Image (cartoon, rainbow, N blue to C red; front, side):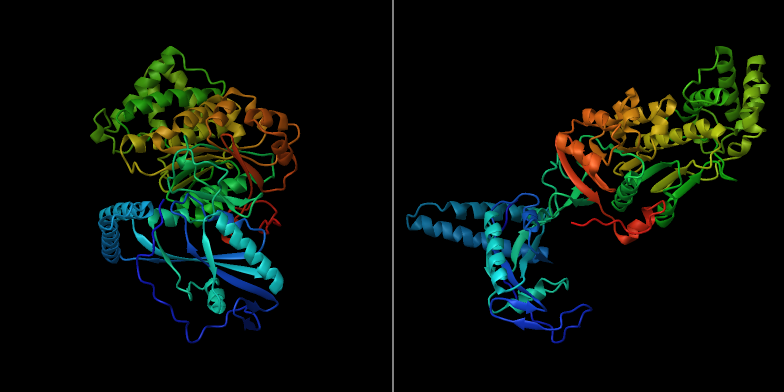
Length: 596
């Protein structure tokens, strides 16, 4: 990314006639030619006046790694496109005039002049096409010290650090008061020492990056702040949507903050426009859903109904529901998703005939124009089964508890809440144990057909989606839930979807084929504190070093290790006070902090 020479005239700002006295302001300010004494401390401001010709992402991050106290202030002012185009045209004219004058006098070509002319021509083209804009940037470094001698030493160290980054700095002699004001969070530039940047160079100046985490697939602009880097002064910003797949896995023992981090990641992805589905077994996401206007479906609660015969979007919706009813009835008959055998041939035939007959009775046929009509209920299928043969009546007898018996509450009416919106939370805590296999199957089916149907029908194809499964060990233990997670982990990216699996009992999860498949297909892997009994399995599965192994055994609550391929970075999850109130659960009420 190239930086430009000054193209536009600068205007020296005027200091406001009267400045409001802010709370916490110092009692007195003493101004000297080379420093400002503020209260009991001293500060001096350096202005960055020279930049390298080429910069990379996060080039300003090392400035924050300085162990002393330094305030870095970025003052950004956009340049109107019309003004930028005119100034670029004049600048190109000056470059060309200089080259012709040198050629007329027989001088050799100036490589720097040629490079500047080429950069200006390329930028003028991008500005004309609307692919880039110009901005004025003023970068000021305010260095703090305990006394004049300490301040002098720290200023020398900061200037040396800036020189290593090919940044030229200059002390604002006799303007230190204006420099100190420019470094305050007042959005006021009292120095006006700006340079012109294009869009790419300005974006690369964002100092909060994680250079140890490579961006393997380009920047999607969907980076999420995970927390504070434990080994530097920076932060950890990770873009899961720019990786080879969008899946993530969070492993930790109970009580180490894995659900806290998962909810924080979910909340910040929602702010980026991601749509999400959550399987919540412990009602931990209800407060967050209420705050962001999400949809909550409380399976097992009074009055909540789900009609398994609702037609999903797609080209083969009618036959898709008929096939799904075979699986659903098999689970209802056995009561366990893990051991439910398929229906015998005669019963499967009778059920298929009855399901299609129930749809026809409601005027729904293979014609897609009839699919918007109200779908039949499970009771209609049972009535059709009783009108078939002995095999059909056997199936109807098995379905009687779900239609007219003690478990009819979930199925004796049309669907009460459609799973629509930017956040849909399936809360299954109130679901009776006997209905848990059936409710889980309906939840997984709803999520899967929503994800597939939205892509197949072309509904908002640019929207990214997330499926978050908390306490996933309950599904990963086997059965249809485990197969669903494995299928979603391998196929989610085709539908613009990322799967987030949050689980404890890492050793048990990694011991199963399904668990290993889900973990190995996650490009984003986050490990929090592990139990000593599980650390061997975790270290082997993730290729941890001895130091990383020791870290996961001794780290504090909220500390985590983000693994992306061979790259690793340790961080502490950090939430604002507002976010903390929405995502915290359990007896802890204070905002978690960590001394740095």
